[in-house]
Every structure is written in structure tokens, then in C-alpha cells.
Image (cartoon, rainbow, N blue to C red):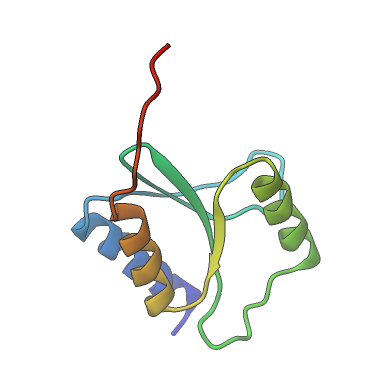
Length: 102
């Protein structure tokens, strides 16, 4: 399966589960994740890679993902339909969200 087919599956699966999905680009930056998903205020960035394990992260991609996660941004690398299913399930599973009022 190509990365393009995996992306099409991701988009279709997100739509089925009512998850906001977008292909994204970072202006003037290379190596950043290529998809954004959001559900009920939670935002996750995703870098898709070919499922055949030939699609590997470049050193720049590793560095960019580390910068994002160090800044508190959730970012994942996914290379399979199972990985897509897992992140969609994770983002749509209710969490204990308590809003503190001052």
C-alpha cells in the first residue's frame, strides 16, 4: 500500500468517526507532520509513512517531531491502517476533562 492510499484511508476513517482531518504544510519548514486531526478540542499531528517499512523518518523529521512534542504538542508517526484505527479510537475516547474555574 502506498502512502497516498494510507492517507485516503485516514481521511475516510476520520470522516466516518466525525474527526476533523486536514492535510497540512508548515510554511517555510520542512520535516513537519503532514496531517492534523482534531476532536472535541484535542489536536493531534500525524506523520504518515509507507506501510512497507521503506518509508522512514528523516533526521530532520525526527528533530521536528521532537521539537513539537517538547512544546507539548501531540505528534505521532503512523505507518498502518491499524495505527490509524488506534489514533482515531484514542482521540474519540472521552477523557476526564475537568475545566477549572477561577
